[in-house]
Length: 140
Image (spheres, rainbow, N blue to C red):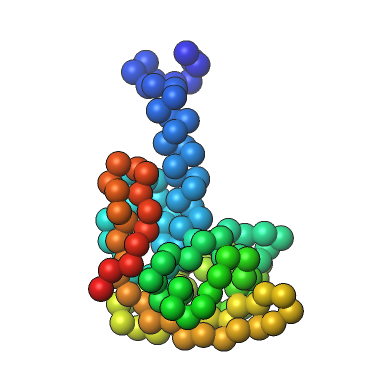
């Protein structure tokens, strides 16, 4: 066992937990580990990553506001709530996308040389599967 690990630590569990935590950084609204990930949060239902300084949609939660508005994997986010998000940390983009339920947030996205402007109604979303293999689903 590594000298820096606590005596009772399980290395495989640490690796699995780290992987889960890193994966959850992509989920809008989550900058915490799986164990602290809220069962319910308010958002628009997209997973994001940052590529070359530009937030990019990785996945859209089926039935979410983002899904209903037509956002799709591969789209780049240009502005959120009127603010240019290119070059901004992912946590800042997440903060702009989240808010109070039933409030709107404007998003400008681009894909294939085309720009799309949508107004998304934030709503409560829940994480299914409390065992850590969860997937985010929409709820009303």
